[in-house]
Image (cartoon, rainbow, N blue to C red):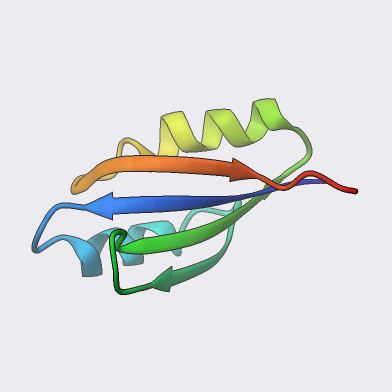
Length: 77
């Protein structure tokens, strides 16, 4: 199983609707609204990096109000 954390910048006025849309995506395991330089942090799981990439590009980037994402893949030690 591959896990990543995605830090998201959201356009003003869209945080609540983006949050609700993220909650409907099967691969999004956890969703948090936060303060600071980003607006939402999500935990995404999938069988491999390719699946996670497809989820982010096809499902997450298509949500209205998402302006930027930064993906951090968890690497086992």
